[in-house]
Image (cartoon, rainbow, N blue to C red; front, top):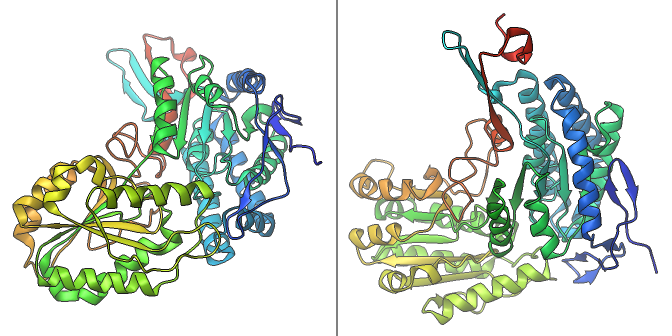
Length: 506
């Protein structure tokens, strides 16, 4: 029997402390993959925290240029091992090698690492403020070791050892303890190897990047609440995230969560009359792209009752039936999607695509459901059950006033969109709906499906709870994302030569 893969702690690849192990599966075949991975005990967590604390004491004193050199070097290392990374990620996730992994996600990952390098160099994330008359100076500074929990759906771009949280934490001068997602541990191991090589080559502290594959639930909660931790970045399921949040909150430790979002899309009558086929195509592509496994997937659509809306629903139903169902990321995703669809049907939604075919491997038939506005309002919490995957619930409101009530009952979401007539026929309805939707989403769109998330300084990939744990921060978009992992340092009457160089008079 093969030995478990080693963990990375304090710059050394060593055997994990703990007796439990696990394997990832190939989602396309439902078969376990060969490599064995360890479930770390608290002893590993404790050692990683000690090493991270020691690394932080050195990192926080380094100039941004040193951090930037590492991030640039790491991005180059990822590109050099692109073929290997893409192949392993494909085996573990069944995501297409091209264009998804090789041509979209991997370049996005190296691009955001380089954007983080630029932010580290220019220091704009620090927001320095000087009140010379009062003798006061403030800026943001590194917070401390950051734990990063990566999701299953973006093995590179949101990965615990490579993604946006990782890049933001490092750019801010904080070491990272990466907790791999159990769906793609091999991909994360390769990324951590490349990162460790870049750490050594650039002379950063050995524990700048560390890797654990899995912990027990109690140890995970203990990890995020430990006094040595500065903050945690988490992307994943709502249930697991809330348990970590409760533990971190009880200890007063910041934790930035991306948990759940149905991303409501409102399609007004004028837009349907103007471009029904275009809307049906746009929605189908957005909802079924990547088998719907995006945190910005349009999982809830609101329409006003009428012949045009009926025609749009039927058009999308037809497209859902004709489009082959894709492969889901894991057995757990298949199980949770099945349970979510069953919950919606049990509480009154109608499954309009019951004869759609299942795909290969872990899969679920493309599922379009409809429900009346009244039924939605009778149980809005249940009707917002996230069906993560190739599914969407369409709510048919009786009129504009009922649509406003539906929007008022929405939980917080990452995105929200309103489609309207291009010549202004829907403007009065838009003006009555937009203010309600605006307060319930982090990013508001017009006439554009929400699936894509641009890596831009102007992007907000966040929103009110339960989309995230805090509405004032973004997980995508530098330099703003760095400030999640920073604390505000104030200097009052401190002698000039004792101030950090960036706060001195020049």
